[in-house]
Image (spheres, chains in turn purple, orange):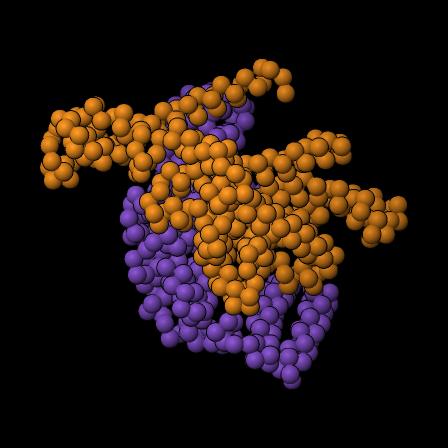
Length: 281
Length: 310
C-alpha cells in the first residue's frame, strides 16, 4: 500500500514540478520544452511500476516496466530478427514499391485531366477504407513469407501517396506555368524544375502518413500467417502463451522503429522543402 | 452543385470505376486458370498442354492465352483465388438479403456486431479526445506534458497492442463489446486530440484581442470564439478517427474470436479458403467505413452551413 501512496505523492510532485516549469521563469527555454514531456513520461512509467508492485498485480497480466526492460535486454537477438523480418523485409520494401507505383500512376494521371478527375475521388475514397482487411487475401496469394506483407503495405500506402502526389502536382499557379512556357520549357523540364519541387510538401505529407500505415500493415498481415519470425507473429504467439513481457518488448521495438522512421522522413523533408513556410524559423 | 459540375467529375469517376471492374474480370482469368484447366481436363475437355505436371511451372498468363475454352469457368469457381465481381456481389446479396439478420450466417449480423463496437469506441475516444484538447488549450503544463506524446503516438503502430488488450481483459472476465470498443476508442483518441487542439488554437491574435476588448471571460472566449472556430478541424479529425476506429475493431476481432464480427469473417474465410466470403466481408467493411464517413460529412455540411462557414 505504501508503494501506491508513493505513486500518488510522486504524481503530485512531478505535476507540481511541470506546472512550475511551464509557467515559471524558464518557460520558453528549449531545455524546458524537452524536460516537461520527459518528466511526464518518466512519471507515468514510475507510477506504473509502483502501482503494479504495490497492488500486487500479477506480472503475467501487466508486467512492470522494469520486467519489460529486462526482457528487452535479454532477448535482443530475437527482437532483431523480428525487426529485420517485419520492418526491413516487409514494411520497408513494400513502402518503397508502393511509393514508386503511386508516383508512376500520378505522373500518368497528371498528363490527362480526365484521368486525374476520375482517379482523385476514387483514390481518396479507397484511402479511407480499412485496406488492412486485404491482408488475408494477399497472404493467400503470396504465401506466408515477407512478400505477402510487402504486398499488403504496397496496397496500403499506394492510395494516400497517389492522392497526395496528384494534389501536389496541381500546386503551381497558372502564372508560374505560363512563366515556364515563356522560357520554352518542355513538359519534363517544367515537371522536374518547377512542379515536382512545388509538390514536395504534399508528397512528404503522404510519406509521413504512409510510414505509420506501412508498419501497421506489415504487423497486422503477420496475424494472418507468417514464418516463425516477425513482430506480428511474435505478438500473436506470445499473447497465446501469456508471455506478455515479450509482447510489450515487441511493442516497444515497434514504437521505436515507427518514430525513428517518421523522424528520418521529417528530417529529409526539412532538407528538401526548406523553402516552405512551415519549415522556416 | 449544378449539373455541369456534376458531369465534370461523374463521367471520369465512372470511367475509372468501369476500368477497374474490367481489369478485375481480366485478372480473374490468369489467377484462376490453373484450377479451371484441371477441372476442364477431368471433364474431358482438351486443353494445352495436357497434364498438371506440364503446366506447373508455366506462366498463368500464357496458359490463359492458350486456353480460351476455360475462361468462362474462371469466373464461376466455388473457391477461386480471385473471385469475379459478380460472385462477390452475389455473396453479399445472399448473406444480407436472403438470410435472417439475426442468423450467424448473415453479414448484417456481423456488420452490426462490428458497428456497435466501433460506435461505442468512437464516442468514448472522440469524447475523451475533445475533453483532453480543451484541457491542453487551457493549461500550459498539460500542453507541454501531453502534446508531444499525443503527436508521437501517431507515428507508432498502436494497433499492435490490440491482441494483448483482448487477452488481458479476457482474464478479468471482460468479454464481448467492451474490449473491442476500448481498442477502437484508443485509435480514434489521438487524431481527435491533435485535430481539436489545432482547431481550438485556430483563432488568431486579432480575434483573441477583440474578445479581450469586450472584456470576455475565459469561458466566454471558449464558448463563443474557440469552440465555433474549431468546428472544421473537429470534423476533419472525426472523419479520420471513425475510420481508424473501424480498423481497430476489425483487428480486435481477429484474436477475440467469439465467432462474431466482420474481422472474424475475414479470419475464418482465410482459415477455410473461402475467398468469396473474405471478399464479401472486405466489401462490407468498405461499405461500413464509407457510410460512417458519409454520415459525419453530412453532419459537417449541415453544421458548417448553419454556422455560415460553408
